[in-house]
Image (tube, rainbow, N blue to C red; front, side, top):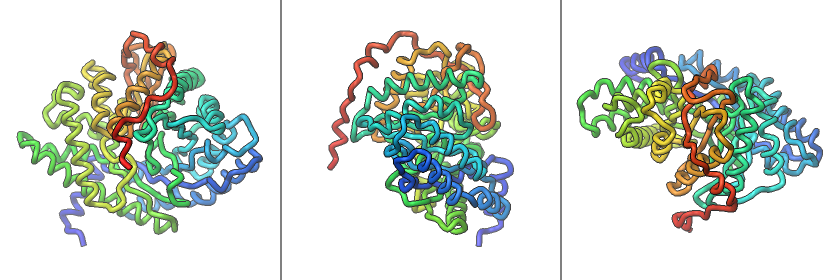
Length: 452
């Protein structure tokens, strides 16, 4: 039995420090839904999602009530749709996104991910069709999320795909311009995408996964920030140990929730993702953790070192608490979703270049960044290429979720709403990368890919 003090501490973390389970995500394999007939394929997709996930939201809500632990989002991820729809005799993949949207709404979840393609070494016919459909799919649906993996440490970087994604992001921004490019907030470009990520917008159910699994993404920037307030003036050794102990507590809570959810839903236990996922709420910021370590403003010199230590300590503490750690597991730095990041960007201290440096040591990459609406597709592709190179060379997952906002320029604010928050439009370099992107082909895999 836990001691009374541990119970009190847990209640305090939930009530005052924003501790929650950020998401419980059900991953569903749709490989057996393939059919030459697109209509029949959509029917099978809808039926399977609704059958597997019919009790997901109800189960999450009952666990919330009984355990007293907030579960902010209930989500679904599915097999990359380019694989599922690949055998269909159709040129239009938008109906598959509409089917995902309809099924997810019937289940009552917040988001569904998996309108995705894996093109790190090249394009199949299904990949080509899915990429063409992304802008319309995101414009015509409400809760469908899309991702494209353009590189990996093993394969290198598909620069033809990188060039395509710059254009796709621009088109998506245009089609959703009435919502300040909201479609782009549901689109992620990856290098080294993982198969068990429970977080949106990049979640998909990998082909190496079981038929159906349940995973959770924990959160707790506010808890870590609170713990560090008792370390003022202490050496970094003490800071790291404090973060590790805190991450252990957070992860144990996630382990308990996912184990119970898997039992009640009679499905496989997937993973616990350790990621510190911030929100726009005051006191729930990764940036404020870094500033608690002694930085005047997130983004100033020393930020990358502070983030590296935070990320490492979170992983070390988390892996002691669960035997099934996976996903991305570290610290997220989405600008629009972190009130401290927003403040640092408005201050001018936090720039895209500094964020890129920070992605070398944290989870994922350039996330939820608003840029001027006149930013060219070539510049966006070049930003993706830079981020993919960091992931490829360092054998880590990196990603870009960038929003060119039509009609807005540097300093304007973009309101996304809810957990997506708000973001200041940040400057990009004006010098052209067009000739670089126009080369196409593949950037070869680095030497460290030869590990066999």
